[in-house]
Figure 1 (cartoon, rainbow, N blue to C red):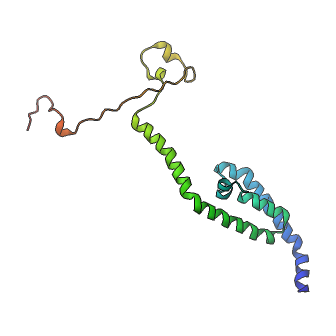
Figure 2 (figure 1 turned 135 degrees about the vertical axis):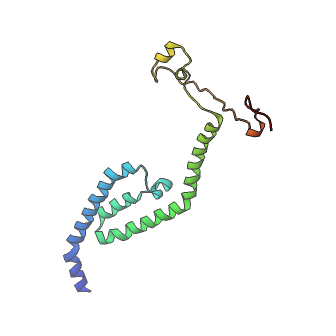
Figure 3 (figure 1 turned 90 degrees about the vertical axis):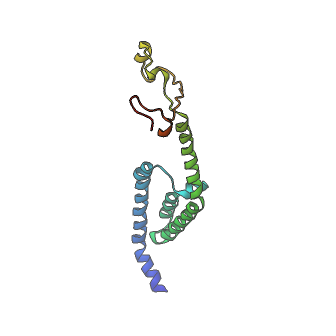
Length: 158
């Protein structure tokens, strides 16, 4: 037991140095990578509790590398459980948002009235930000099936 304590005292600077190096790595991740991916971890976003990187920073700052790793692994497990419990909610919300746009597409096309080119020179000279967009509903007519269309000129009815 005494030998283990001696080895631990000797290796403590290395273990602490690894923790500080990992702390810098997590800081770099949060500074350059996380903003570009555009989202937070599932546990932090859905529960309002600290994110995985928050927990990692606290663990690496407060303890040695060997003691921080179990804390971070437990946080990753909580994050996976949160994602598994709420992933269907995330997809349902995203799909509902996309269905709104699909409903608009089924109704017709929306455009700015001055941009439609109705022949008025004053309106054509306006820039895209010089007027307020006016929604215009364009109804798309469906063609009848071929069997109900009248024959073209010169064709006999069969």
